[in-house]
Length: 186
Image 1 (cartoon, helix red, strand yellow):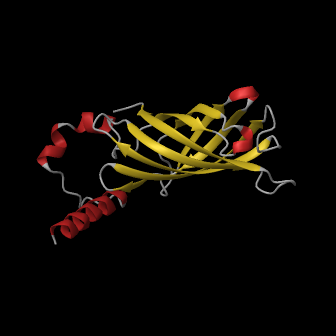
Image 2 (image 1 turned 180 degrees about the vertical axis):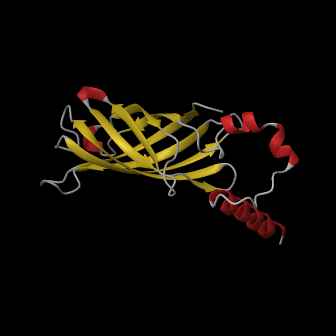
């Protein structure tokens, strides 16, 4: 009952504000720190951030499980679908490198946990012929993370990189990475 009433009230206020209506009621607490509140993102997951990642690049014994490390810049969510564009790179042993642009979306799983699917495309340099053989590669991934009080998010990501069937053979690889997401604004 109470939770439903709170959602209905929030929906009504947001709808009224979006429509430009004067029906939105300003609470006294809202007017006290309007300037400070407008400086912060409306949602805890809305801040631009850097995602640092490290783990195993190819989950294949024949390749001796090479390491991977990288960083991705993730922008503030855009559009009504709350899609966050980003750009990053990953590197590994023997000349492996991947420079990419991506798009992702955070889905809150309670107050602390987040599920984030992502899609990326970019330029892949294979080094010692591990997995993908083409320079144009696609990456799909899922990330589960936990947010801490200071805004940091610690997570585990699973990725698949391949040419998406554009050429044959369509060799690909999977990666498992630990991530640390650092918000750039608080």
